[in-house]
Amino acid sequence: MIPNAFSLALQGLGVGKIADALQERMETMSRTSALRAARTGVTAAQNAGRMDAFHAAQEMGIQNKKQWLSTLDGRTRHEHQILDGQVQEIDAPFEVSGLKIRYPGDPEAAPRLVYNCRCTLVTDLPQNLSLGQRRARDPVTGESVVIDYTTYEDWMESLKAQHGEKTVDNALKKVHNESADREQHEKYRKRLGKIVPKNFKDFQNLKYDNPDEWELIKKSYRNNSRDTTSKEIVKKNNESADRKLWEKYKSEFGDNVPETFSKFQSLKYNSGNWDEYQDYIKALKSGELSALADFSLYQDTSREIDEKLVGLITADGIQITGKSKHFISRIIGSVEQRRSGVSIENAKKAILSPTEIKKRPNGSHQYILEYTCDVSVNPDTGNLIQTNPRHSKKVEP
Ligand SMILES: [Zn+2]
Image (cartoon, rainbow, N blue to C red; front, side):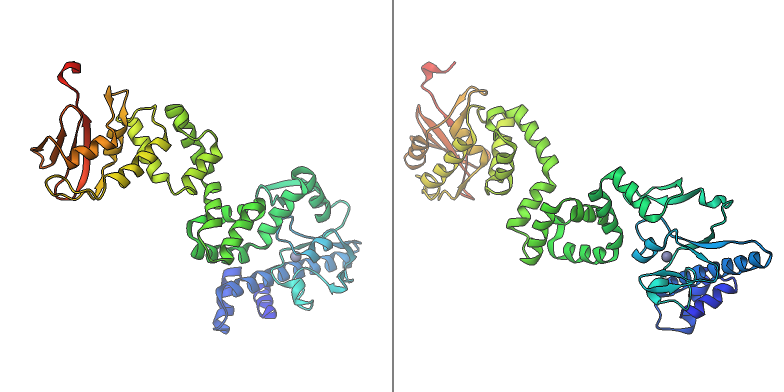
């Protein structure tokens, strides 16, 4: 394969054309591997060309040596990082890990030194200005910069001094593991859904920069579960949005909101009471529920209504099946709306033995207990709609 790509490259064909030709000759070859072989062939041909130029220079009496130059980015393989900057006589091979290679892409060298190589060859002539500076891609920022000449290993050292060793190591891992990580990303998304970041970059950042959270994700994946551990993950993922909501609630509803953020998140994700809490907040917001009523009173009242009123049969034979949210607020009452509440015992009396039953224009049945309270029920569904206190005429304004 390489000799094919190599000879095509020597004929001056570009990467795309070479890949086309390789695929024509070998129908089973994928586009990816054809492109890889083509790029390798072009690297080999360019460097073989430089070797010819060095030989020609020698014949003209110019004494020079060859020097290996690697690409300064996170993708260069380990052996070529070590080779970077190595100087050899024109006809002596470069040496690394007990292997020999005459120039980058050398078709006679071990394949693992050759495939996908982007290294190049320069002459080490002192007057060669190309060694003054070189281009590098910072694996942390992704930016391409021109730097003063340095070897790959020194460049790495300076990156670590600049960004910190851990950051550089993680950035390199992201580059090296990219294709494996892409597969993992897909598998994780498929099994765990939105717990896993949608964006691949975010996924890699999570994996390498956020080890605690990554552990939780892995655990969820192994257990094939979107539940317990994933709740912790959802908490973390929603942290900033939740914090904003908590602060907003805090400023609007003060002591009726959990005092710490962590309690607020527990309420949201772990208590099973979040929907009810949202109803409670809505009732506070509309003013139908007194700000003096805290959430536990709201919950207790709701339960007590279920226990004591739901299931009763009204004086005219309607079975109570449930309650509106409005009904809970009406039982508690609202200082802000100058409306006192109704005791559940009185509501019960009104339902079972009213002094009067009215059929209202909207179809509901109203059970009135004189000077005490009234309760409205939807006769079709059995739902408790609302309740009002009723006072003796003397105290009404
Ligand atoms: Zn290379």
